[in-house]
Image (tube, rainbow, N blue to C red; front, side, top):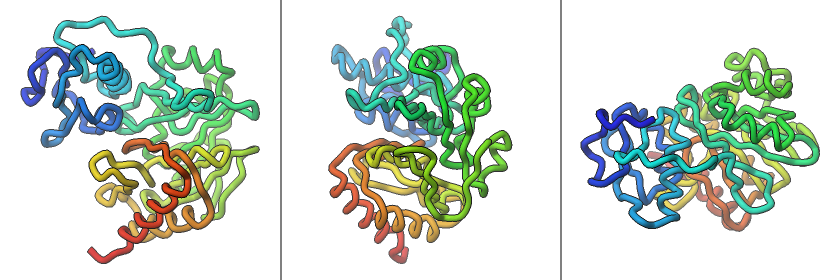
Length: 291
């Protein structure tokens, strides 16, 4: 629960606020960019949702995703019913898990319900509020970890559902409980319609996962920027090799098309696969350009 006594002074006047326990993960800004913004090294409310039902829903989505429970209302509005897991498009079977973990610096995680076996991509905070609907949806067969930073509570999820856990061998030290490790830069078929694509760069063992040729789960290798209105990568948060990350994204662009980019950090985006492909090509060019 957000603490009124720690309300950040930079919040705009009104009911909604962010408290000073915020870790500046940016999750709220990615979910509701019209309501939350950055001031220094923290997020604050920059616009109140008022009576707008859609904006109020977005504020609650951000509050329930916040890893430090730093978003709330002065009036102590009652929380609405369960908002997560939240399907990203009707009938997709792909869900935003919300309940981000402070251990992964607020990274988003994703649940995919599919006849060939349900998937959890990266790890949300373990909570029965999320485990119960996942159990009702058939549990988890595979946990796919994009890189070492976003392991969080993966072991608890794996133990709860008896899931196999996949990670690249170069980042496997962060998940010694993993049952399956892949190596090198060649893609690996995990199951029908599910491909692991190594993308070394952000970390040495980073990978993205493409599901049904449509949904690309990118960890911290690729995301959408609300500010730039374009695909982006995080040079200032590249822990291994920026040139290798550019090469990885170039291979991704050469071999695959996708309609969704669903990252750990950064915003998600849905567009025509050819438009996203063109944007990805241009991003690689910018990444390779001299500074």
